Image (cartoon, rainbow, N blue to C red; front, side):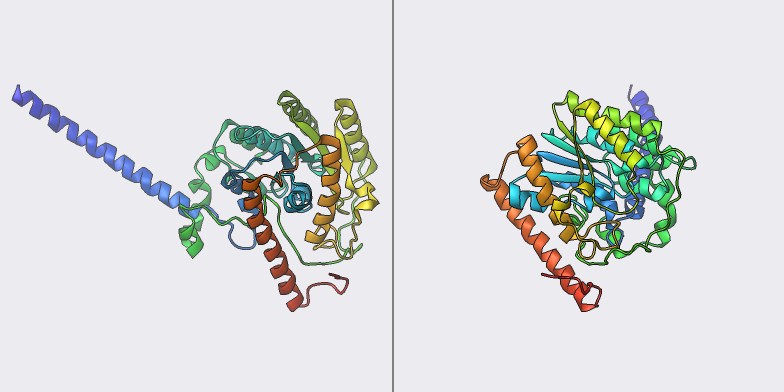
Length: 365
């Protein structure tokens, strides 16, 4: 009997050693993967935006979704300060409509807002232009069926799904380029770089008509079939969850928003009974492209975004009756800290750009 037990123990030892070796290899690969993943702590901070959402555990009555026209043109801090609206922007650079749909689905795992605002400029983009934009959307996203769906819907032909599942396969080349931030934030939260998803820019570069490439006339301005399908799915998802959907075009001058685009969005909004806001048509916002853009009219700076947010907040209060949470003591304490950080960064940027002469002579307090 004892001999049998000894033999069993001897047979188990190689198996246990094998399991331990496998576990050690997996642990080492996991550590390396965490190290080589880009931390986006330098100039390209947009890669943080998807992951930052999970650090905010406050409720949001309004979720704003879209590409750069969402996260650079609307300030949730102004929506709070002037209307008591709690909001968050889930946007990324060149975020496609299928990606926005999957992000909305994932958002509903964590909260159910009263309203969702979707940026419609992305309807003009049929497919992704580079892997980097896909990575900025998905690398920071928690694994879920929605993430997998979004990756499959937007991958370029030369991308590999396995490299999203195991990012070490994609970023292994960074092992020789690691910086201090790669070690600092390998297993800790990266610092929040946005303000409820808003990317603050306080510099000013006036609109220059010669600053953008000439847009050639197209024979067909129809939105792609995939975008139309996902826009329908987006509206269906909001309707199923009792969420008010607002469509919005930001007041940027490039890429040009031509009449055929406007007609298609208007037709969709009318067909679905949705509120559609084209900020290009509302002079009362007061946008001045001499002072309210940081890149010649492609995106608004903080001064322009604040104007849009004051205009938008008034419409949301009137049309949707979003509640005013400024009497909520707990939320007010949280947002007081966020407002202070927002104002501090705005002032610091203003002083920095003034010091190097980058702020335009058109700037006024």
